[in-house]
Image (cartoon, rainbow, N blue to C red; front, side, top):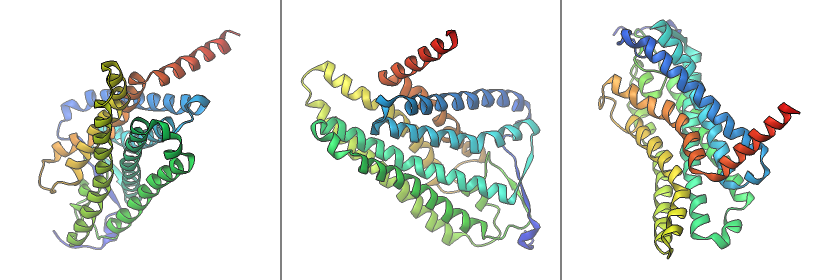
Length: 314
């Protein structure tokens, strides 16, 4: 590939699923419905937790932050992808592409640590119920939330600034659904080995540390649940964590396969499907998982609905 000045590349082309032109219309319709459902589901959780004072406890405030992350994550990726599906091939500016990359890293990093914090919260509530208020006090909660968002900002800033400093000359077609780091690196006409090593190490730690926290928390939770004498009590205790376990499995599984695998490990189409899992399915399923599994959120939703009906009829 002929080396040119970096300024020669002022925009990128997102290919998306252009290899399947016969499916563009169907995919557009499906993804549009999923995106709207994601917006509505996460917005409902944010509203009911914000308005119901009974839900202003760490468990639900963590959930509120998770919904903000999921709603933002989906909004960063989905509108651009819908444009790609409707035009088969679309351009995105150099600045716009790296702004999207920064946002993906920000919200993805924040979600990694939020899920870890939520596991720690469940561990404290189930394994140390008498000391829960002292263990998960307001100060600890605020530190965990601030740390999660700060890690996301740091990850986005460091990786995006480094990748954007590489020269991009010649090819500008991104064979992916968004401007994610692995897809961008394939277009850089410079030696990216040092960055790949540093990025892999950093991403490994960002995924591994929360995952180990989650694993240790649930091992302790499992032993605590097994000590409960009644079957009903064991089922009730485990049901409080079932939604979190589902979310963790979906998010970490697909993120691990995308960011901790060699670039040549999967075909471009497989990478797109994996990216859809954490950018499309996780933000969609989290509101459904938590609202269906949790009686308190369902009661708060019904309370909000009844209040709306009363206001509408009065």
